[in-house]
Image 1 (cartoon, one colour):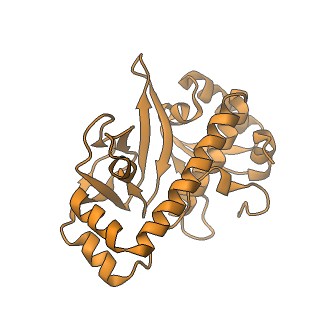
Image 2 (tube, rainbow, N blue to C red):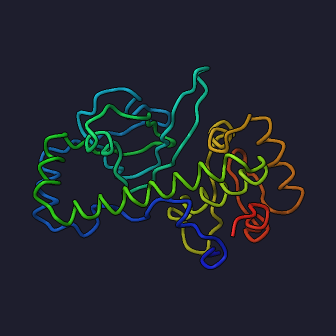
Length: 235
């Protein structure tokens, strides 16, 4: 079921579709001339917070979580990237080290693009430069909205919000007409929501009892998206 008109997903998710989609052939060739591709197993680290960025990463297939660690070493997921997205370019554009870490949420194919090739393409490609500016602006709005809302909402509403957003990401990989299965560990889901695993497990049980979702092992299938949107309490 589409949530268009029911929930403002654009305020919670970054622009879907790759920044590189339909990039002029010459620009794409320049960017990809020395790219290398690697398979990352689930949990594999793509880059770590504080490391010097030697290039950017293009998510060919799979999903990657971007996260930060607090003083206690607890993980806080700040974003889930999907197929077609670029990772790590913020640090290169700002001239800083990586502000967060990234790891594969599932087995993923990821291409590495050297820093020099990325910067050269940005300098020469007006199309890529415009798209990066647009994407950065949109990402800032999404993160600002998340910080503002998540700071004052109860856990039940935050969980509902994240299930809506994550469902949209997994929906892109689901065959038309088939149930959307959210394949996310309870630890990762708790990290997204910003709460303890026990709270997530308890509330998922409540949602099941209310007929909102079902679980298949660790997979979650939302059965009543309208109820979930109502719980999220976000217009």
